[in-house]
Length: 223
Image (cartoon, rainbow, N blue to C red; front, side):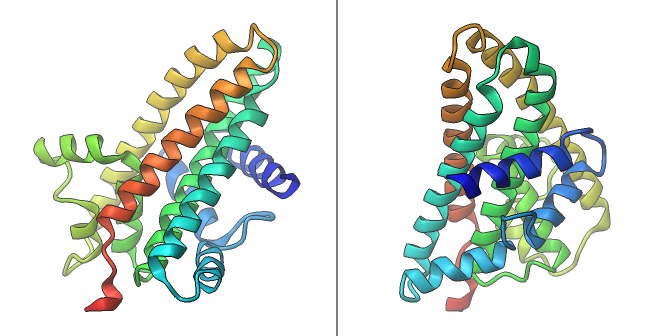
């Protein structure tokens, strides 16, 4: 738990100050390359694959459980303080859970045979971060051309899509921040309740995003 806590706190302290246009790309880079005690997404995924005896789906399950647990720990740690710490803790919480979720989706992509250096794959990772409902709505409104899987395997890379996804994911993060702030500020009035609420909320959101990525990013190594 000590490593998990330090990973969350390092991510939060380095990425919390701003949520600007380039924020999600910075988070994605850190998640793929690794930050502090959090190893690169590919290295973490490869370790799970070895532990699973080469079974990609078992490795995916292990990766999902690990990141769900990590998200829950950082959510508890960054929301356990009182109202006086909320101004600093909420941005740190958002930064911590975002990098954990990016790390998870990038790990899933690596397990399934995608090149994490490919800009098309990076866009697919960001699309997964939006979640199934948001992606469906964006595709329906023609603000997103297609699903994460189609983005990852597109014949060409569309630079305009980089900007679109960055804006949409940033907007989603801001929306989640507002919702998290309302819930956790209530919880902060009762000792440990804020931590419990924040931890369970982040764990559930991470499980959903990881599961969606698992459904979307089909195993390309079978073809």
